[in-house]
Image (cartoon, rainbow, N blue to C red; front, side):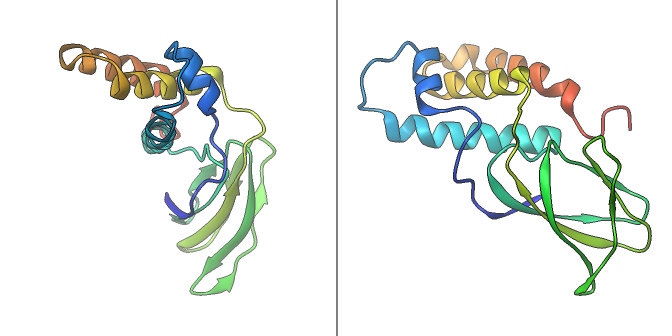
Length: 154
């Protein structure tokens, strides 16, 4: 999954991250905001899910399913031509035929709390966790996101 247009809103707000860090000052707001974006992108890569309010594209093979955590499909093309598709009603996009490129807008109405917690753990890891504890925080974040992987069981 590639990001075409960067996210304009994050699933975890600056205020939520600062509360999680028990931070009351504004001196590091820019740093924390960048860490939130980095955390979302990391969780997106782990899970294969679009979590930000952004535009994404992905290459799908024939018969392959794209799981969307609800996102709005903008287009599905093969060699520049529009391709018909169906939404199975469970947040998955299915199509038949050869490889196709799907472009979609991710603007989830609901993000599971474990994925938000994983993002907050990654922000905490980057902001305040000692070098000795960084792997523990990383592993904890990964464990929170693990059940939401698109290819779980594949």
